[in-house]
Length: 101
Image (tube, rainbow, N blue to C red; front, side):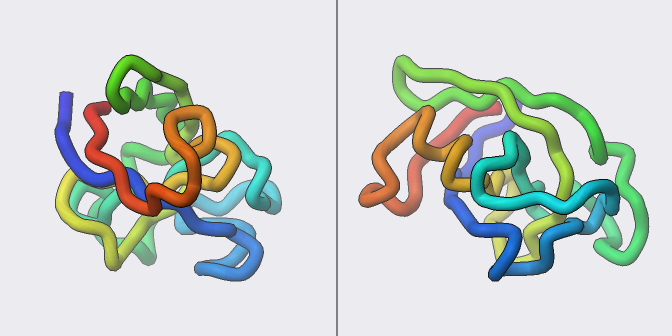
């Protein structure tokens, strides 16, 4: 498992609605995350992480989501989640949360 930061983004307005993995259009209600670039690898290529489902934990809460994008600005081992995924773990007012995945 990895320890990092959990943040959130809206794919439609931040980074593009298709993500680094390609595929269908995504939005803030999609069950996806963007993986920190240190783990994802070159963001202009499909990563081995693309399409993998990850279990994300914060405190006593957990949820799953699919890696569909890269996050070039994320800290190491971190996930940038859609609001839909983030809100299953914490209130959006928290902004950044410590996660294990």
